[in-house]
Image (cartoon, rainbow over all chains, first blue to last red):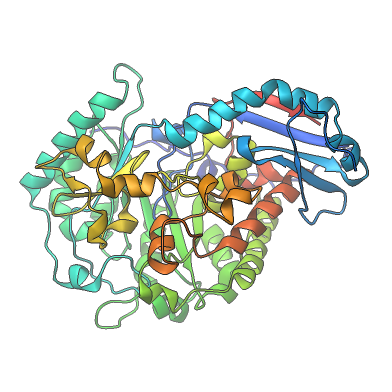
Length: 56
Length: 456
């Protein structure tokens, strides 16, 4: 039997201090970004596992 | 207004309802940018942004093409029983099956998993540290066949990453402990912040409510990392979505989904909310999750919206494969019915025309090539209107093919919630404009990703 582990990160932050709003920076005239990775999503609307680490 | 220089790709302006920014999109590659309204014309006529995008456009096109057409299955949804102890208003499995159906015997279920293991070994890399195929027990209610289910998990725990989607009513302390000790991901369903609201759509065959059972199941799972709760959004709970996320946050739910009711079968259409009403209630609930995060430092990720953000920020990092075209059904995953029937997705179980074969007599590879599967995997938003000319078609994917076919009359129709998806995308782009998008995603969401374009 595998050991019990916690596999997503949200629950481990349960008692963090309240988050301070980010300081507003001067607005950029253009915003664009794109990230890439190997696709491995298999969720559907009846089931989801969001954390990619948890799928390992 | 002049057009872009002839060698540059044409970017389409898209109003996101933001006071400062307009989106410029390249739909074919799912490239996006947010541009100060004062600069839109200049950017459309050619600029550093367009030049930089042009340099990457072929790569982005290939990435989207691979995501849409070149995936191999890496997951399977297994229904170990046709039966369910509940009679929910909107279920996509016919009531005769749920009420009078049969279980897959334990030996047959073990045999099915052996065949699935052998199939995935042919399409996924094995070896040390390799990703395991995911196998999700689904329903009907999988815990109606608990002994067979648990035997399968124990025998194949080295071969699959397991999940169970359950209505929660049969998730006893012992069952929850068994699953948590084996690191099985657990999904529950709850439709309301109070019993009358939940019970309006989710109840037993005798009409008894299930709200308290699910709350107890949620309490059992507090502190466990890998669990989530689905709320199916209908006319019955639309006014209570903000209360819903407050309840989830209070119960330390790490991830939830606020799903639009799937209108595949007629029962669901009677509780379908109007798009505009749904969008307003949904965004209000999202805003409440953000307030709660700011107040407590603890996130409640609304996964179906997070997936829209991912579709924009990192298209290949999507977790849900409904919001892409073709959808993941029959190509990223498939579904196994309790009688061995293979379907592109659980949503098609109950629609016999979409059975692509039988696991025990035909095998997975043959089913993937069947006309039934090809009809679903061939549904391409580039090939039918209004999707083909919609600038956000590769953020939304026009879900769901089962719903489009059954409710709207064909695969080349939109799904049930076109305007709702548009509002989600606009809201997601506004959050990006305001620098808030990370607050709606799980911590470390971009680990393992590479930044391939950046301008800000």
